[in-house]
Image 1: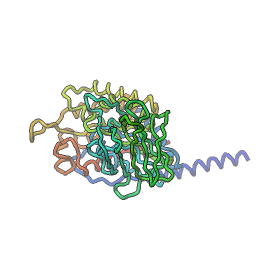
Image 2: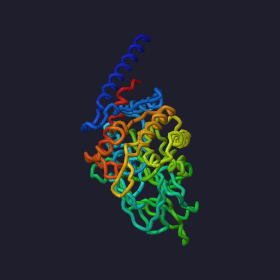
Image 3: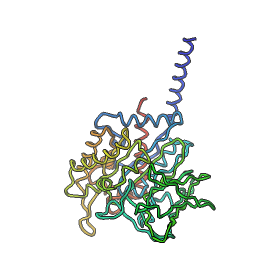
Image 4: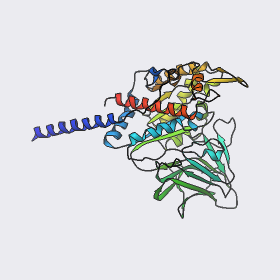
Length: 420
């Protein structure tokens, strides 16, 4: 009997192993066009410190999801304008549907950028009413404390409302059965009651003292919402919105993207509630893409840049001690020196060195976008191919999609090369 149990256990493990390998192999790369100016030797994620424990721990969670259909994984992609546009990051998110299979996890953190009168990601639609003001972490002076999103909108207009449709592209992808509002009354009172309009119902937000957020449980799942703000007395109270997290208890990878135009590492260090709100998503992997704005300064140094990142990572590790990191180097870029004249920013090379150092010190990986592009001066070639804009800093939609596909392939290649 004892011998039979051991044999059965061995057979079971062997069968699960075969199933896992087959399932893992079924996740394939996406097609990307080839350009002769790209250096494809840098397509993959490298680990400068040779310590891949954090990354392997993360990808073991991915393996559990893929093979057993178990687990919730949170990825946070954080940066500046490249991420606010959410073309690059949404392309990765969209490709990850192949990993998520039929689980349909929620969309992840969203912010109503249109309300702040700045560019909103094209993959969800925002409309609003009422009078609103905004604050950003790039501002030198502001009165409104900010959260992890680095941007906020606020109002005391009783007619104010925010409406968001998560499935703008007509392809049904996102659904939630509870909405979390990251927001607060500026004077610390409960002088404003946020409400959710759902079908013919008005649902009052439940204040969660543990997370300091408002929760709206829905009677039936939905993919769009409208939130209003009811003044409780005759004195106008200011309500601040830091963002929303649509929630649903299903397995899968949730890909959060946070970006603010012009943001640098110090911008996020100056976001007062960054750490508190980060606890709401407990990231398993953070993709760092902050640096393009840091490297515009003539005083930019490897030491100063790394010290700022060290401080940010300290905040993160108080929330998620086992979090894995992938650092995306700055893209090659140019600086405008007159009306129609640009010159290459040589600090792209210095920033590249800094990212490799950060990855080594924090047991992370590097995706070397700078070298993959073709190195210094390569942005002109991307522009000539219609992949970069005239400012030679930002990419076109086609360029961002290409980068998103390349990065997704790098993630999948790393995962498929790991052994658990």
